[in-house]
Length: 291
Ligand code: C2E
Ligand code: MG
Ligand code: MG
Ligand code: MG
Image 1 (cartoon, rainbow, N blue to C red):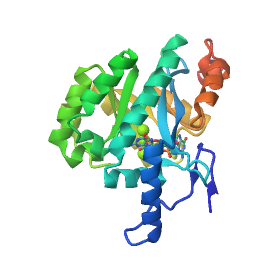
Image 2: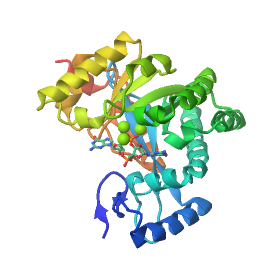
Image 3: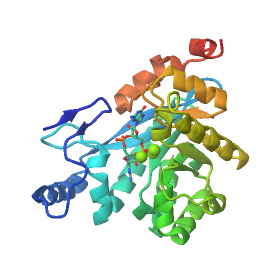
Image 4: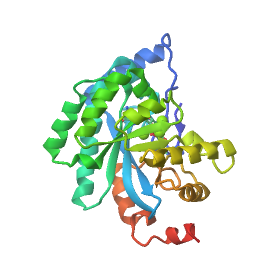
């Protein structure tokens, strides 16, 4: 049974596959094969700069192009890849694909960053920074167009090791964002120590912020915290115009969510970048937002 959704993927397998469920073994075998065969595909979700309402970046989100199913969403297989360490084979593939997409954007003269997600295993990998340096050099892409999204929980699993890996990546010129901010084991002292450029407020606070005063307070406080630390702040999960407006009033720098665009295939992204109102100058939405 594949629950259809419109995120460019399907929630097929139950995300919580337990140890004794035979499905887990089947899935493991299939995943091993998928990694060998590179049965994955990246979707790209635009991010918009709230100062001019123009696209400033895209986030790469992996899907599994399962041979017998439709596209599967990461929540159904990324946790298993992490548990088994197979994520270490996926990450270099995601990096390579992201950089190729980044190269396409650069070739079109578009000043757009590309973000990819790292897992806890990646942050404990002492060779990760070398792999990044190698691929960036091979494709001749400036590291400042590449952003890495990491969660607080991934950092806090082994903070000293993660800090070392991140320090190297940051020294190479890559940008680093804290993903799902507010949901993990936060430590403000690590936020201060980490070479972070951006805080990404979790969608669970953003989705209900016009209705729920507590969510609104968390978003407002996160925006202020980011700015007081001289960091950029992104809100994910922007699903309507009202939320976009509130975020803009709060001084949030960047927004991402279904209201702007769902994650898109590479082909869809190319069309979106040409045709979307977020992609053109003198955006009519800007006038509406500030009226
Ligand atoms: P994330 O990095 O926090 O990504 C945001 C998730 O929210 C994405 O789900 C996206 O499709 C969804 N989303 C975006 N806008 C909205 C919105 O307006 N409303 C709602 N309700 N949802 C929205 P997705 O693509 O299923 O990815 C889930 C998670 O899987 C990601 O969370 C990330 O942690 C992980 N992931 C995705 N790609 C990769 C990857 O290449 N490597 C690793 N290690 N993890 C990945
Ligand atoms: Mg992310
Ligand atoms: Mg997130
Ligand atoms: Mg998340």
